[in-house]
Image 1 (cartoon, rainbow, N blue to C red):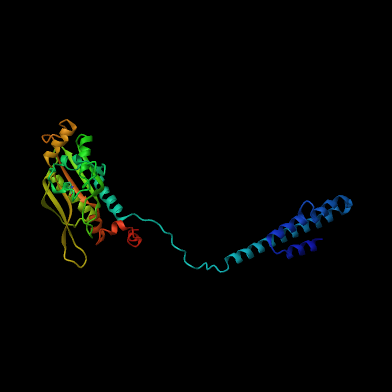
Image 2: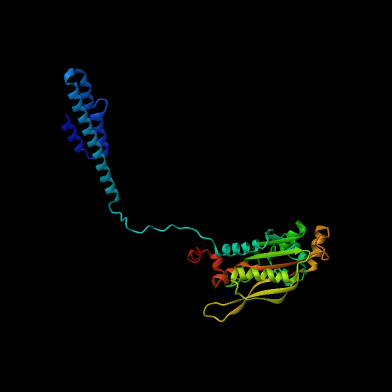
Length: 331
Ligand code: PHE
């Protein structure tokens, strides 16, 4: 009967037995299904009344099944959540962030690309020709010493500067050239707070028919104003590099909080030495880079140093140690 069925549903303690009860009542062999089958034998005059009763019973039972199912479900949920404090703040995810060297490189590259410089690349394992000879660096120059440069038994070496990319680019492409080449460079330096044996440079080269010292100054002044702010003073100090003449070192005047402003060296630069163009001419076996036809300027800067200046990093070794306490500050 309906009362029995409802009592059975009420007594059920878990979802599995509830399903058994449902089948027992409403299933193919279920008690209510059997009763409904009995409709056949009910006299015609009573069919309407009996049918109504059966329908009412089915509705009451279905409703009871659903109600019980919901009750059991929320009971199970409550049990699962017991002991969990939903008001606790969520644990934060460990997300990565860009390394300061990547940030400063992308920024420098971005500024120079907007000025029309295209990216160029070259090998880190170089030969003496591309790293030194073609750059007018004589065989007895101290930079070529085994004490300063990593040599392989083959005579190849780890490039000591990205200036080798200048040579590679001019060998491969006719002027005009306007390229930048960010990348690693290697020197046999004693490691301390400002020196590593591998560091990062950004090289630039512009060669065309009428490139002047004014172009060099304007380009690099603009660059450092973009990078460090337009109020930054930039000065060009005469210097010497074998591959540029005249040559300069560039200083920017930094105003650090609570300190007297001071000049800091940030780059080397100069007008491409005609001897470099001559070496390129010999290598290309044409006169596309004849010093009669073209002039150019080149510059090179240390990205590690730019990052240290930008963020006041006191020890270059922090840039390679991957200490997350350090790296997290750039997220
Ligand atoms: N190659 C030089 C260095 O490593 C920098 C430089 C590049 C200077 C281009 C002049 C022109 O110190």
